[in-house]
Amino acid sequence: MNSALPPLIQQMLEPAFYPHPVASVNLVQTHGAYVLLTGSHAYKIKKPVDFGFMDYSTLEKRNFYLHEELRLNQRLAPQLYQEVLPISQTGEHYQFGEGTAVEYALQMGEFPQENLLSNLFTQNAVTLAHMENLGKQVALFHQRALVNDHIRSFGKPESAQFPINQNYEQTTARIGSVQNTDHFTQTKAFTDHFFATQTDLLEQRLTQDKIREGHGDLHLGNICLIDDQPVIFDCIEFNEPFRFIDVLSDSAFLVMDLIARERSDLAFRFLNTYLEWTGDWAGLPLLPVFLSYRAYVRAKVTSFLLDDPAVGTEQKEQAAQSARSYYHLAWKFTQPQTPTLYVMQGLSGSGKSTVAKALSLRSPAIHLRSDAVRKHLAKLPLLEKLPPEFYTTASNQQTYSELLRLAEIILAAGFSVVLDAKYEQVAQRAGALALAEKLHIPIKILACSCAQTLLKTRLDQRTGDIADADAALISQQKQAQEAFSAVELAWVIRIDTEQPLVWEQII
Image (cartoon, rainbow, N blue to C red; front, side, top):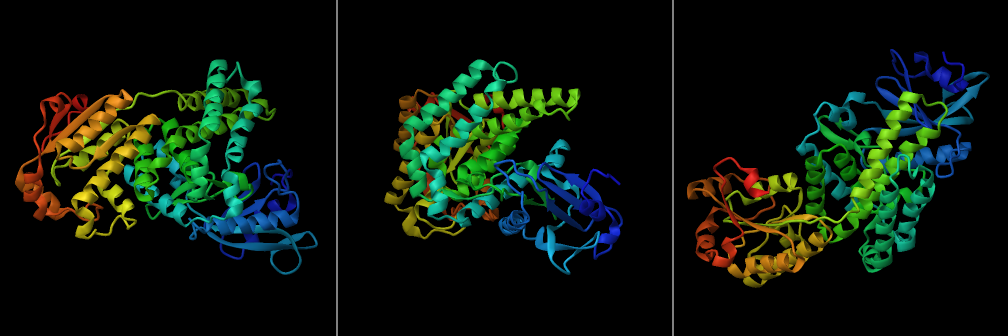
């Protein structure tokens, strides 16, 4: 028994303490809590600490924040977060309930630690399907998340900039050691310029209710698999500014975490799924700032270990290397990029969306599907089949105009774009060519084709997709197709989707 532990925790390490069968108890400590793992249940006791940003110094505060943790985490992980239990004391003996509470415990369902996505990642067991699941899950979570005037106040430009500037102030001692001097200067200059020039965009996010009660700590270490489904847990309950944030900042943490682990394919599968289900593409100019901020926070927190006398030399070396990597990544997110515009072309069923989806991971790029854009314009669910009036000439023109408008916003923010639509007409493709010329960026037209019998088979077998087209439209689409002009041919790459893709010819 560790005599340095509080008497309550010492007793909770005994299996007999619990009202259910327990073979053994394992203790996990964080800077703010003790977590007792009993096999079937986990019990969290908050430490009586006050770090400024996290204050559990009184019993009343610990009780309040445990109830907040229960309330907030039941939004995404109701199967894990069960109840807050009072702990009373009789003499030197502690027990659940029965008298005046001297402490409180949050009871949770326990899961195997190997099921954490951070642990599964090291075994290469985190999949694109997991990321697609998470993209939809987080999109729905954000659409339902609480928003009110108090929460909106945290999205005001000065409020949004405050934690970013605070990071810079708190890390000046690292400049010249784990933080590159030029990178620090350039990173800060980028965010200073952004907040000086993008006030209108930030105000727009407020009016669009994009500032909500989010998770605040969305990374692989706070996601586990239960029945092979990702479950997000351990949101931030102790600090409102960390939780009342732009929904894209909330999502950016997981994107950054995956990019830091050199898996941009997983990052962009999550991001593209999230954007498709929210329709929040116009917010992407904010993403470089949010990604840089998330990386910088991780760098700052990691570098705190360098001053901890309890941390050994080897661990400090690892912390220094990790901090350097995150500081570099924070800088890299702020650097200018030359994106590419990819334009898919082909009949429904030709495989263009499959190619586009794969390309968005390899490039990587933002995948803009006309099917999703059309349904967001119609303000209808993605899986709902649209009636014919949403496929008139006027509706088609509106959809293609919106694709171009969004593409310009995204490309200007430094992200490559895959425009995924039929693009059967010269005029439609001309708009994309003009946009590439305006922005002085490369453009590639990927013309997809396959045998007509395969077109029909693919469309007949399509299920659970947001696209509405069926095999009955093939003949009509073929008649509407216009041949590539001599000007266009310089940018065309023909792809037979019945053959393996040759990425060297595409990217």
